Length: 164
Image (tube, rainbow, N blue to C red; front, top):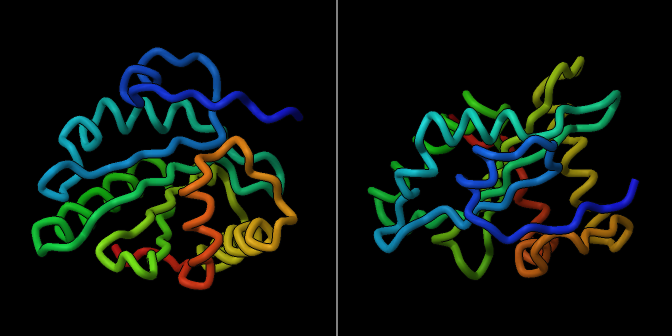
């Protein structure tokens, strides 16, 4: 299947009006205080987000929400924890990638896993394998934001389930 054309838009507006499925939604999810903006935590937005994400087909892992967050203060870390729990409830299992050189940042990956026969560890291993292949150049990801792809590739070995 051909890669979808990326859309740069207000995620809340797209999620509320979308009638098609998405493989990935990217969120630069922190405000000037380092917390997740209120509109990205809203139940309606998270419900819409879950609705538009493609569910897995067969052995695929399904779609993902990839969120760049800042957690350089205790308040921001609390926001990260709360947002991860909300993503888990609305979308599915949440994993993280640490950002070396920018330790106050973290990338959360919430998977719309759908019916998955394996364990959370097996699901995580599948995603990590895809990230590692991407890091090796075996998976083409031109439809994703280049800086975020590079961050994930450079830090793939830090991929792990996010502790809720």
